Amino acid sequence: MNANLPQKTLAISQWLREATGELKAIGIDSARLDAEIILAHTIRKSRTFLHAHPDSDLSPRHVEIADSRLQLRIDRTPIAYIVGHKEFYGRLFRVTPATLIPRPESETIITIIKEVASSHIDPLKITDVGTGSGCLGITAKLEIPNSTVYLTDISHHALKVAEANANHLGADVEIQRGNLLLDFTDPSIDIIIANLPYVSRSWERSPETNYEPAQALFADNNGLALIEKLIPQATSLLSTSGHLLLEADPKQHATIITIAKDNGFTVKEIRDFIIWLTKD
Image (cartoon, rainbow, N blue to C red):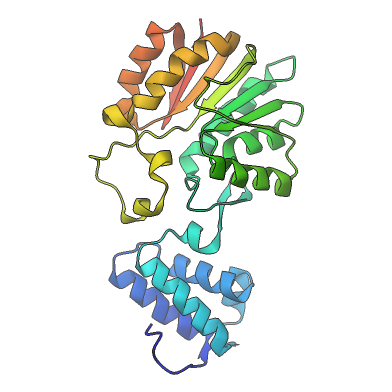
């Protein structure tokens, strides 16, 4: 949609149709959904409202704002950065270009934590390393309220986002800045969770990842550099029979498992992208 054209009044259905067409033309599979999210966010209504009122007119100002946001999406800015939030485990988390966008595959970590909690007598101590937006650690705290949860990250900006999310969602968590676990002092953690950067710059990836923080996405040594550092650090901090949950690409799992076994871990289970390790 050309921003230089005179202001116009469009019905909801017409704007959605035109926007969807433009997004489809550049190969965005979620074109209709993205158009609906952009417009609903712009007029501060739900997507259900859009479906129920397709003939309602949009104000020229709303059209202008929606068009500007649509252009960002055409430029392949992730939809989460355009609207400023992303749903994770049924909750909305604020995201900014300082944080990685939460992915659905990471929700498996929460499922595993809840399984551990169901058979654990004492309250759990959980550390979320490289927390980013805080989606994993905050969700763990909200799903298991009697747990103690630490959020750590090397990025000051990411921790500010995590703190804002914790406050907004009412999660009482401890926030610490640190390089992996080097500055962490509690030696009796029950679960360490880590969705660290594990993407190699040599991999094919979507254009949207160009907008995500490189520090939170890429790692050297074919994506394994930070995971290799974390595993021995986790050994000294986990309690007896503690758990280490790592997210990584399945093609990296065999190498990670070898490193983990060399550092005193046993593989309990692999679920999709998640390696579930226990301390021997």
